[in-house]
Image (cartoon, rainbow, N blue to C red; front, side):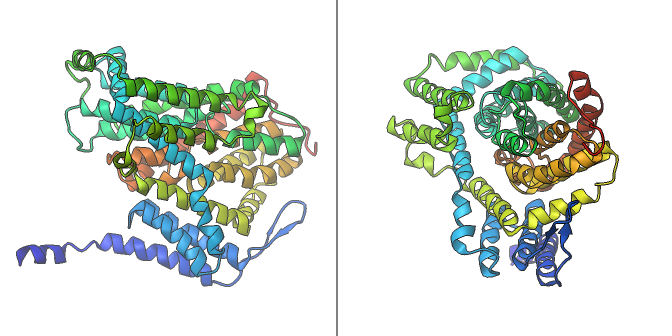
Length: 491
């Protein structure tokens, strides 16, 4: 009786409040009268259709539910599909087809790689070797993890990097001595890995698809091609400045409870010795993953490979893990479907905003507010818009929505197109506010070390820091490196 009363009195009013807030935002936006057209600088009108307004309504409900985690994040994603169909925003065949978009399957395959590394023991070997190098100081463990994560994102997709590093972090945290209990060190390790995966992924075209998409738009609108190494030349300083700043950020906001873990280096060596020589499964897993990463990396240089989607290549690894009996059916059942569904829903709302025209309407309305502003304010306004949008929808979509509009307005303000391209790409790679912004965010969340609210809370100062770095890059770093920043007005 007492237990029943305790259950009755512990009703979660806060959860109900935020759940109803999401529903209220949906109802208000969906049923309110039509909103005015967005008008670009050339006088072209962009109407907000009923379907587009519905897309914004779904967007607001999902964002509210995701931030405050009123239901499991994967369940909120299901609501995205349901609402699109029930309110006739998009047909079921389209809304739910996005749930199996190639990007979602890429995340699935990346998580499988992480699972294999954990099961075979490769992760523990890597963790012990790394701890042997960085030593017992927790500040150096942070730095070691961040540098390794950053370097890996230069040669492979940041989703695959996060899935590979994640089990390594679990192994490291296991030696911290706090069990699975959330700690500042745990939060810093996992949130830090997610943030740094984004920072490192901007440096080359291999880190994420957004770079290639942005360069495609740039070439089409500006009629100038940007090469692989030219992009890296301008992005490397910014990516690595952010990695080291994030290290400082986490040492301030999530300073580990322990300055050092006494005896950690010896323990790591001892545990590594106990593992013995490499097993057949470890060798096979390393070969399969190595070959897949090499082929995906070569796509940027070999035209024949470009025709093959990277998702198909990485999924080959998933199949081969079962062919060689490294994984079995029980392992397949351990996949974190909550995370997979989260990204499935993110893809669906992203495409919904894009296809209904809601995203274009938002982009034009935002950017025209700055069409008479100083060039620097205009560039930062674009960067800010992309940064916010990339937290809610795919960064590829955020780039596709805003870059064409910005590149058309830029000449009237005397802004060089290059600075718009690079500023947009920097912020598109670092969604620090919401889990749906990037796969590494969601993978890190699976650790149980932090809530969606905590992730958002640390993301606010991190995003401010990012905008400051973009501003310094536009004013100082890129001009010193030879990037054109301004043009004769009207040019």
